[in-house]
Image (cartoon, rainbow, N blue to C red; front, side, top):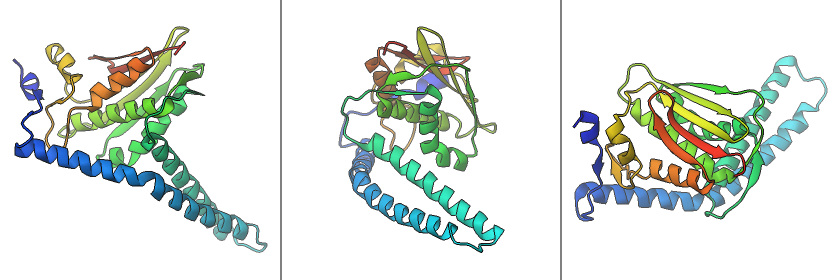
Length: 245
């Protein structure tokens, strides 16, 4: 058994063990924070709306210097980006209710990258995104697929934790039958005999508050769309959605 295989262990089912207790407590803490998201983001959006309105009013004043106009433009742009981030966070924090909407595949991937941008930058991970030209929009449950990509990006970030060269490639391609989203990282490849264990709930080789639910949940969300999530050494984790989904 390889070292990587040995690291993929089942989560201890003894709820009294210190490791399991710490993970459950961490999950509970995040759940409580999640409950606050909708209310807090509503208030923040109100404040951002006021800032945006006043900034736009000031920008209409005559006699403003070029530097003042530039600074106001930066303020307005920053507020709009904050509002978009909050909107994305609110979407994925809502209760799980089935929904379908049409979206450009590149826009869908970009929304997930937007929410992981700070964490990836802080970890000094370079992200390369490539999108096949001419891809048609897809009809999907946007929040669920956003979450799937967030889990896959978080998994890639963890894989690069101890790597000197940190790179993630997010490739989007498709044809008349399906659209695929491939997330590859420059960490070590996963041995073939260990791949399926990664998709089993509560199996993880990571320390800390990890519960081993990210990859299984991402695969489940792909399956809800009639799609698949597999691992390929050359392409990384590949989530494929049929066009008729």
